[in-house]
Length: 229
Image 1 (cartoon, rainbow, N blue to C red):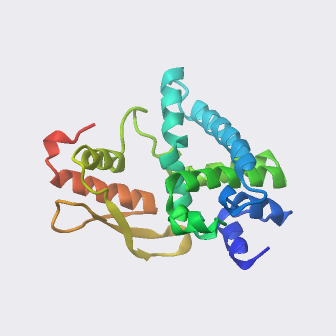
Image 2: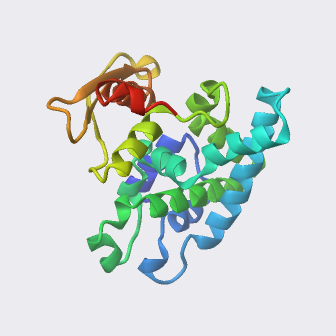
Image 3: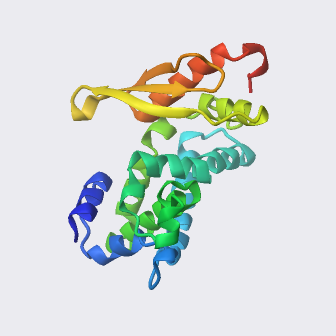
C-alpha cells in the first residue's frame, strides 16, 4: 500500500488485510477502470443499519418518525461530506483529469460517496464489527450530542440556510489553532461570514464543535430575531 493510503488507514484506525479494498474505495469512476460505486452501495446499506441500530438504543422512547428524522440528518450527504473533510479524505481520492481540474476532491457528493465506499471497504476487508466500529468512531461526537428533537437544526445548518435565503456566499470555516495532547485536543475555528466585519470564533474538543460554536456566534450577530429554527 502506498504511503498516502497508509496514512489514510491510520486515520481510519484500521489495518487492511488486503490493501486493494482501500485502493478501490478511493478510486472515482472518472479515473476509469474499476471504481468505488459498488463499495459505495454496500457502505450506504451498512451505514443506515448501524445508525438506525444505535439510535434505537439511544432513544428508547422515540417513535418511528422521530428516529427516521434523526437518521436522515446523520446519513445525509452534507453530514457525510463533513465527516470526509474531517478525515481529509479528498487528499486521497483518485480522480480523472477533468474531475480533478473541476475541484472534485472538494465536492460534497464525491466526498460523501467515497466515505460510504471506505465503510464498504472495511466491511469487505474484515467483516461487520470493524465496519460498525469505524462508523461509530466517525459519528461519536454527533451521536453523543443529538439535539433534543430530531427536527432541531444545528447552528451551522441554520447559518447556511440564512445566508442562502439572502443569496449570500456560504460561511467559510478555518481552523486557526489546535492545542493539547492528541487524545484531548482543543480546536479554535474562525467563521467568516459575508456582512460581518470580523470573523467569529469558536472553540471545542472537536473541529465540528468549534465550527458550531463559531456559527452560533455569527448567528447572534445576524438579526437574531429572524434566525431561530
